[in-house]
Amino acid sequence: KAGVTQTPRYLIKTRGQQVTLSCSPISGHRSVSWYQQTPGQGLQFLFEYFSETQRNKGNFPGRFSGRQFSNSRSEMNVSTLELGDSALYLCASSLIGIGGSGNTIYFGEGSWLTVV
Amino acid sequence: ELKVEQNPLFLSMQEGKNYTIYCNYSTTSDRLYWYRQDPGKSLESLFVLLSNGAVKQEGRLMASLDTKARLSTLHITAAVHDLSATYFCAVRSGGGADGLTFGKGTHLIIQP
Image 1 (cartoon, rainbow over the protein chains, first blue to last red):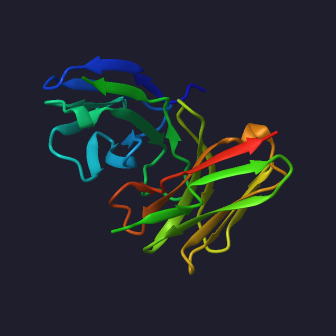
Image 2 (cartoon, rainbow over the protein chains, first blue to last red; image 1 turned 90 degrees about the vertical axis):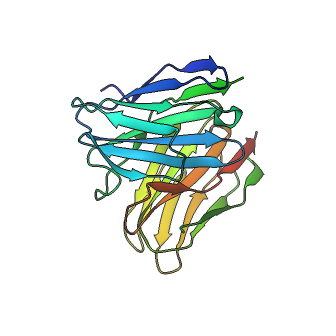
């Protein structure tokens, strides 16, 4: 059974550019959530999608957005990149989402974004 | 606002010893997760704890949850070098509205 797949794994962008990260959840999983990991702030919740609808959103500026497609694949986009956006972006999938009872949340390998 | 505190944040121990990592959280929650992260890698799920008094064990790791004290522990028995990693606890708030809130992680080094 394939795990959570994230692409690209590594990328370097320039300040002011935008970036799109992709996540394919485990087959059958309908919930995808995104997290940002930095040495200073640790792991922070960005947003969660379930059946193409954003259910929850963390405390991030509007430059961070996402969407989910009918096949449960998800993308997140960061516009007008800042140096502080350099981070590991982790995607997580689960059967029925953060609000579900008892299910394990599986994380992908992450996308390492460096903004220069 | 839900806050999750882990301690210790850094721990160096010898193989064969026992130790406990603590995870305190500030508001009511109905589940708690433990994850392991190796350097440069993603998060590996260890345990999901759902109810007060829940105890789960896998190999040399045992996790427990006390919802009344808002405390979870991850106990390491007879540590081996392969358990060296960073361990995170994460809590879902009772309303489930804010995703998972993670602790800062415990960086564990087990010396042979």
